[in-house]
Length: 204
Image (cartoon, rainbow, N blue to C red; front, side, top):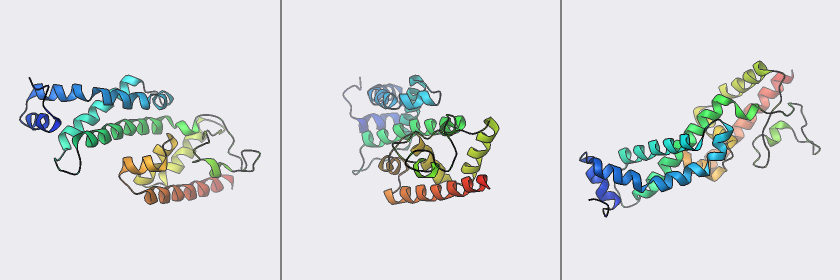
């Protein structure tokens, strides 16, 4: 009945509690959610999330978009929905990664130098080309190190850190957190400084 309606018309009907319009809009955006879930499914596997988990989170993001969208000439609903869907998927990935302590779970040395180039863990921890895995003596030490690093960060720094560890680039992080590139870069510089202090403290 409403298949030919555009997004704005469907949203208006949804505000009037029209379930048929809601079902049509959800069906319309399943393709976008599928694309986003596939985009991040490999990251999901690393933290114990399957495609279906990511798809469901995408549906949650779409629901939030429908609830919070304000019609204006500058932002179309499709753009707003894309951002909400992706943010929701990345939010659950970030949360799962945090619980898994993924970046500390593999094995690599916490020594001052970690490769033939003389680079330290600090030099490469947030490098896009480096797989940041850290070897510690036991699970308790790994847990303590992660908690020490995390405790020193602000909420914004934690969000930036989680997304960076998941493999996102500066521009992607800035877009998803609705911050400037400079803000993200500054946060990463502060994170590096805090990690350095913690690692130096552990060495003493």
